[in-house]
Length: 280
Image 1 (cartoon, rainbow, N blue to C red):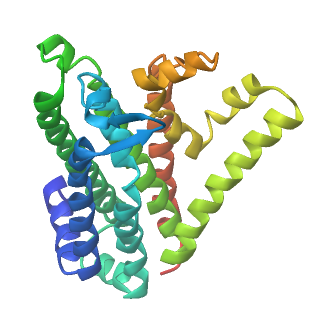
Image 2: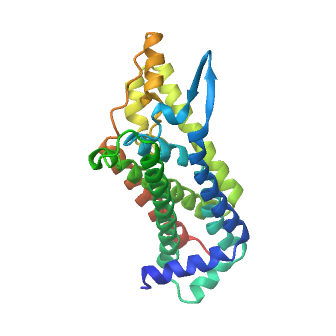
Image 3: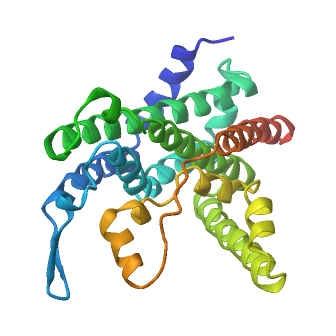
């Protein structure tokens, strides 16, 4: 059994010689750095000028929630790298060559998964450093207890990335085509939304819809990193003016982390089973 480092080196060698992957990787982190520019954004709402940095979006501990949520919108860049990493093995017929050269099918899938773990970890560390710097500059609260209060959102971000990447890796092994794999991923998103709407509006029961869909793969990934906008003071105040209480955030429950972790295991396991049974 090859070590973690050796399997990771194999994937790194492939990625660094793939021009599109390098471009997407650099684009992701460049755009992620652009989150800092939000601090300069000002806009008018009626006669009131709103400066986003003054609305508390970079306050500790809220910044951990806000920045991970914003960073999540850029996941598509890395998802393309992930699906290409799998499908190119079939397009260039390197799957069989890797196995001939001594990799077992289990090691082949593990090398992909290890790369996903490192990719998710690097993105998480980048968001951590960026958030810490922005928070220390703009936050009104800088005591250690406040700074690290909601830092668990970084774990949620890491697990969501790893969950999305594992899902897409599984689709890559299943369909062996990048476009079809990514297309199916978006179709699945729409399908879950349709099922949710069907249960909620046809059966008129939001509670059942929420409880049932939380176990579905994409919804579980969405639940682990909920939107943070409703937590902003300015949004709460606007809600009060129209008679709505939108202070609904109660944190991310432990079972959300467990469900996503189980889906990651399922996706990796079935990626291996597909490769194991398929005639190369």
